[in-house]
Image (tube, rainbow, N blue to C red; front, side, top):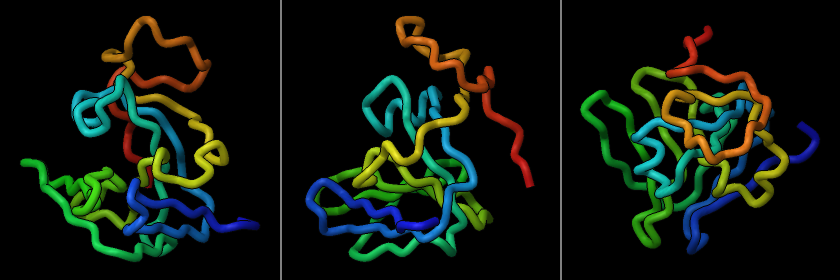
Length: 133
């Protein structure tokens, strides 16, 4: 990557810098992502956790399946997600200073996708994509 990606929460007390290209980028239409973002879908990017530096404090809540969703304790911005036993980190692309640098390449949970959304001609999975090693 020629230039690191930077981002942060709404109050800017939590900052993220990323020094590698994402492993993948996508849109998710699942219920959990809808509830987390308050929108009909979430734009995200997956990185090696070792490529991400977080400064400031992030708190989390853990789902019954062990997924940890991290947020800023000051402003409440949802910033990233960690799956149990994963060396990856899922960054909510909306927190990036330049989210346009990471266009999505696929969509998951399209069986829950709103019909009024325009077709983006991305690879679409009716539910979750199969985890790749």
